[in-house]
Length: 192
Image (cartoon, rainbow, N blue to C red; front, side, top):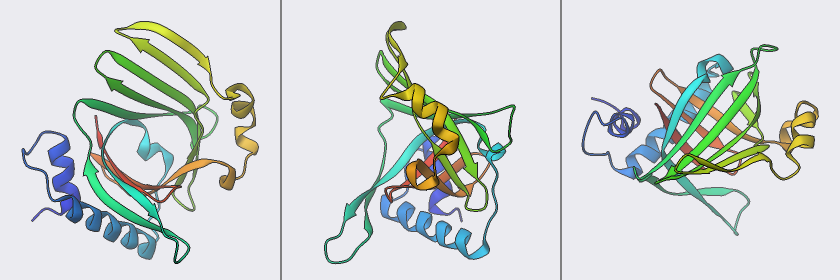
């Protein structure tokens, strides 16, 4: 029997028509993360190279009684919105490259790009979005640096992990990947 993560990936890639229960996917992701920590699974950046469509996310709820983050309900993203991560490698280092995060809704497309660095001892991919392209029906509306992007891009390698946004990947398969974000939420992407 397939686990809920594999069922979710099959649903997102239109191989099956009915999604698994969201709670089952959240529980399976948490179990996979725990197993990866216990077995000290080792990934590398080259395994992430390619295009990945975001399909399932969990929100987070900050708790007041104790420090930490509690996962909210997980949900499958609408197929009307296409959110895709594309990782490419650098010629300088096998642990560095670039990321492109594109969001398409109808005729509107927003693309954020920037540098990445993979911290292999922790399976963490640090990133920064420093540039943006905005287009409507293929017509370019804006292209350039955002939020001091040129300086942030030049100083990216000098930043500590604590200063960067990141995903901690705990599951990398041929057709799907899963990670926990710096803010505590979980996400599942499928190969696109």
